[in-house]
Length: 136
Image 1: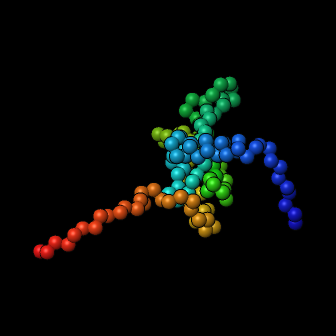
Image 2: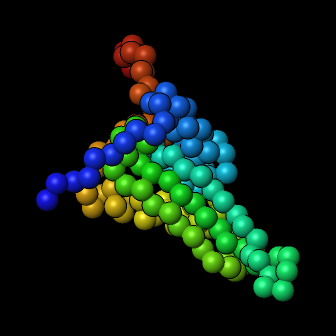
Image 3: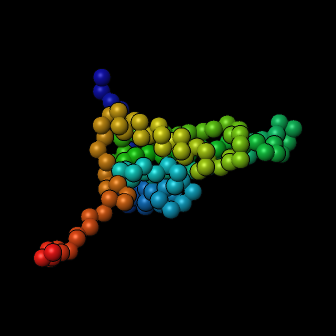
């Protein structure tokens, strides 16, 4: 069966800029809980107040979301996590949905043996000076 052909709707430089912004959300923004040690991850958090059927919004009722993809440089998987009415102290998408995304994405990348695209954090090469051996 022949796959449908895609059509480019945005110039590649614009797509690159959007991807950089989405990566920034995970590296330094509200999506930091979606980070994976060996992969560049891109995504967006969202928090929505639930609508009151009688008008306005329901007090203390939310939808928490995180949508993202990995590896960011050559996406293999896309996922959207939506938590309806999270309970507990936290309700923002970056607090409750991003960690679920991280766990799902980590499992998918591992099961499909997708190689990492960055060095794990904290694994720096340290060059030690040569010490002279004492005569003692």
